[in-house]
Image (cartoon, rainbow, N blue to C red):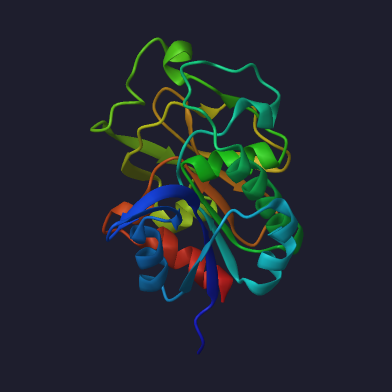
Length: 228
């Protein structure tokens, strides 16, 4: 059986090889390795422009929206917060177009960290630009802060992982208002949303943490199985 072709979003960054320093298309290898372990054939997608979104989607069997810098507030008509790093607007435009095309085509989607925010904004949702201000603490931004989240057992996420999972998910942004057709399916104990799903979609799952970084590949297994 041929492996389903799975697109992974990437970003432009300066990179060094030999004596050269040039802008490069970058993607942490952990995404590709997790897709490959699950039986998919990973391919990295450079953010070249929204006009290529439908062409990419027509050739893919699944889409991973990867992590990265926070989504710009312009994408959801919010006021700029100076504490948020400068957005990569070219990547925002490309990924918003890409995920909308994937939703229209019924393509399986696994949206990770920033990717979950892109999925929510693409469906008309909004974000909390700076979570510590809303909560009055830094617990969600601490890099070593592992915590247990509650997962809806009836969701695709719950069927893959069970009703509880321990995650490490440092983030400054969070879902504020859910986009059209999205449901919250996982929560921290302070009710911050850590997982979302697109209703009626074959597999449209977003998670706040990075499942590609650990040894538990069950979520990627479920995603690639839906892409077959």
